[in-house]
View 1 (spheres, rainbow, N blue to C red):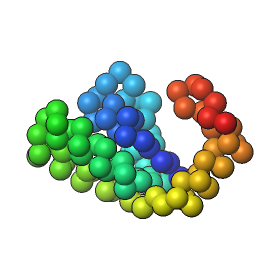
View 2: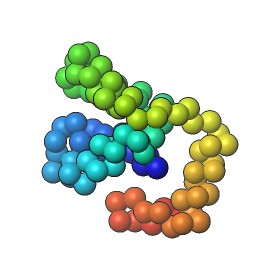
View 3: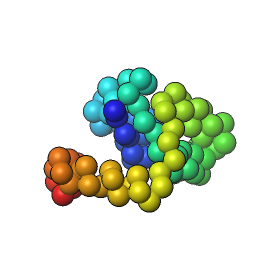
View 4: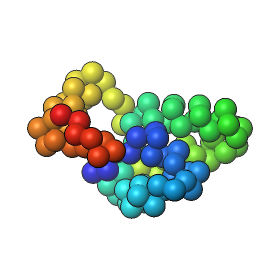
Length: 95
């Protein structure tokens, strides 16, 4: 399972210097999980910077993965898993 946050999606769509780092997770649609709030964040940012059509193209591409609603219990479970497995973000431990 690959959960990709909005900053990674934005880097990927902009073909930024770190886009290749996120490409494998994003392009593996079978394992891709997209939190619904990430659709909001990416759409808003792309819409603000580039307009409606590019924003719709971005969220359409994101929906190739499995879009999930994140409620409080799911968010807390994810936080616990992250802490238990000492997942990192940008090289910094999240636990």
